[in-house]
Amino acid sequence: MKKLFAFSFSLSILTLYISCQKIEENDSVIESPPKYVIDDAKPVWADEFNYSGVPDPTKWSYNIGGHGWGNQEKQYYTKDAKNARVENGVLIIEARKEKMENNDYTSARLVTKNKADFVYGRFEIKAKLPKGRGTWPAGWMLATEKNYGASDWPDNGEIDIIEHVGFDQDRVHGNIHTKAFNHTIKTNKGNNVVVPGVSDDFHVYACEWTPDAITIEIDGNKYFTFPKQSNYGWAEWPFDKKFHLILNIAVGGGWGGQKGIDDSIFPQRMEVDYVRVYQGVKK
Image (tube, rainbow, N blue to C red):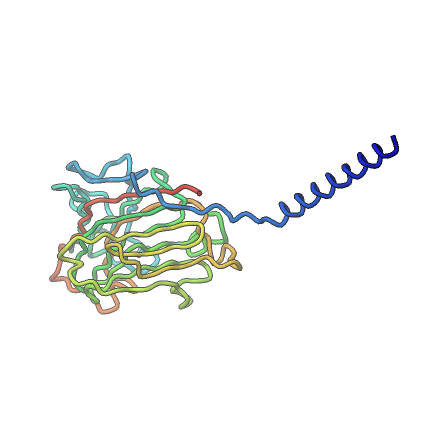
């Protein structure tokens, strides 16, 4: 009986030891966080512009006005078809030399705010850009809500998928702006690349935005990446909230008008063949 008790006791000790070893081994395993992978098989949102007339009102709204838009711009944004319309399968945003209120030019600025807002994804804009001194076209994103800091911009962030200024033909830019990194304090993060024919041919401008990085590319060639660092707070990385898309042509302004405006070039168009958004899954 004593031998049986001793054997049972020894077996219990051995089982406890093995169990403790398993716990220690399991505690030492640290699983990697799930990776966000873009699913580019099918867009979750798109406008292919396979219609005619005004831009689809279920997808696009307009910013309207002529107060300079924070950049001393010279255009008045309208919702008139002469400034924004769909013809022959492309969206046309047209800047024109014409007086409206205190502005000498008209143009359009289309937004998806509160109609299509996104957190992370791949954003593609296939476009042909205007040309000429004074034009400033862009395809970009702003935060839909005010979640951080005291001001909408730059505290809540900006992602520039494509910017171009007509006085520097064929050079395209990709940038991000935050409270810590923006052009007003000369700390903005970005890059540019020369692509001959941006006003003659369509190119695909794209951004991939994940929890870890923002990457800008043209025709599949990546030329700027902004990675999230481990010590970043919202001032450096506000890119975890909803953003919406914007398409526009500005005229003049602090950057676009640095070398003046050539009035002989107008009207000028940005043509957009499609806008597509792909989102991702965690794996």
